[in-house]
Length: 207
Image 1: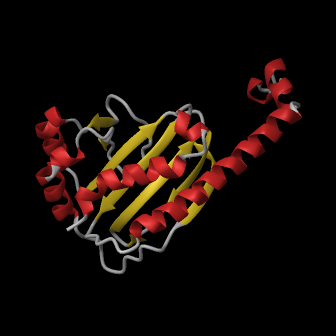
Image 2 (image 1 turned 180 degrees about the vertical axis):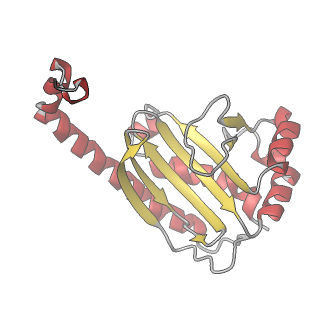
């Protein structure tokens, strides 16, 4: 007996033999790479001369571009800029294109400075509210889903809820999720979306 887990359905076989599908996937991948490269250049401009409350050894010029196939079974591409992962310290802004889901612009903070980031978040809360930002509720920095149970919208009426979540956390992840069908993304303006989001998060990490 052959296990059903090894049998290809007619639908799966049709997809497997559809060369045009794979050409389209390759073309989309290349276009997203170009948008992420443009985002990198734009963020470097944003960071030039900017004063940040950053951990020891932070270099605003460090970045990485990553492509993979298996973020919960879906392809993904992302840019980390700035990128700082050193021991227990994280200070990174990630622009993630998660195929089949959405785009996530995320500020990842952990380790040195986290107490100050929390204070500034709450002290400048109304500067942050109203910009489509959300606070991750996940138990780690590496969950990318959004919605009830995953993220809490940062709105002017939720300061007490946000404060309660932050009080229990040794890290902070603030995100903005953008649909893949967003007109700016289709128009190749991922860099503008990412930079606008980065600017909206700066009250957390600037003196």
